Image (cartoon, rainbow, N blue to C red; front, top):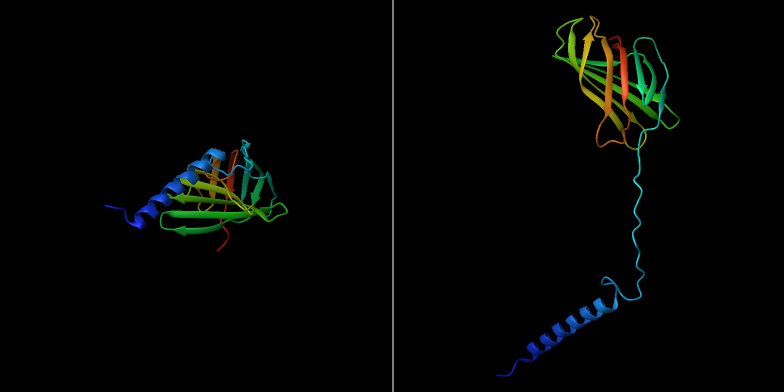
Length: 181
C-alpha cells in the first residue's frame, strides 16, 4: 500500500520544521538568532524607601499630643470625633512640607467603662501626599477617657505597618480632645 500524497507532505513538513528548530538552537545562543546581542542582568541594589522626616507645627490649644521618632512635633487643635455604642474615634490631620504632605492620627477607643477609667485603644498614624502612604500602628494601647470625651495617651509606641514604606517608630504622648459639637 502506498502512502497518500497528503501523508507524505505532512511528514516532509514535520521533518523540515524539526530541522529548522535544531539549526536555530545550534547557531544561536539560548535559542536566539546568532546576530542577537546577549545582555547579562546586573544585580540590582535594593531600594530603601521611607517616609521623609516631618516636622509638625502647633495649630491650636485644644489638644496637645507630643509626637517623636520619625516625625517630631506637637499636635494641637481639636480632633474630629465620632461616638458610637462602645466606640469612640478621634482623628486629626496636620499638614507639613511643601508638597501637600499631611500627618494623620486616629485613635479608636473601645468599650469605655466611664470617665477616668482605663480603656483599650488602637492608634494609627500615617503620612499622606507622597504617592504611597507610610503607616504606623499599635492596636493594644491603654488610655484614659475624660468626662468631656478627651483621651489621655500615656507613652505609646507605634511600629511601621508591613506593606507600607514606613520605617522607624513613632512615639505618642499627651491629650487628644474632641472638637466642640
